Each structure stands twice: as C-alpha cells, then as structure tokens.
Image (cartoon, rainbow, N blue to C red; front, side, top):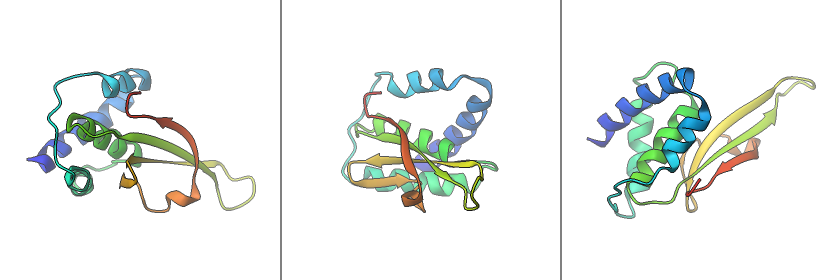
Length: 128
C-alpha cells in the first residue's frame, strides 16, 4: 500500500511543481493533519517505497522524491527535514547544480547519492 501511495503522490507532486507555486506546496507540507505514529522502521520503508515508485514515474526528480518522502514521514509522525543543496559544475564557470534530499534524524531517506558534493542552501525543518 505504501508503494502505491508513493506512486500516486509522485505523479501528483510532479504535476503540482509545474502548476502550483512552491510556497503553496511548502504550506501543504507544514500543514497539521491527522498523523498516525509509525514505528522506527518507517523511514526505511518510506525510502524503499519512494525509490521503487520513482522508477515508474518518468521525469521524477530528487525534489519530487524529497517532497513525497517528507509528506509520508510527517504523516507517519516522524520529523523530516527537506534539504536543498547546490554545487558548482565541474568545469570552471559551469552553472550551479542542485540536489534535494530528506533527513529523518541521522537517516537520509532520499537523495543520499553524492549529496556530499552539495552545500546546503535551504532546509525546511520538520515544522516548516
């Protein structure tokens, strides 16, 4: 069920990023709602579900995955921090590269690959 929910949320989030200002998406992430406290394995389950579902939704970026994981974690009663980092491209003068990931405590739920390359630019804390 979690993988199917992640799949649906990835598609909706991808469309929302094109159609809706990010400030509105941020308000949705921060909104209080009914939360069901999940066990300590919930972050790992969310990580796997989002990763698997992302393979089925073409064009799913790290930001889309991070937004969905943040939503699922917070709805599961876990604190989640969505982080956006930037890095300069390899050749001097190349454009900036960006990457998003989600942290739940010390566990990196999404976007762990190569995140050390990126300097933190924005952090949307658990209560953002």
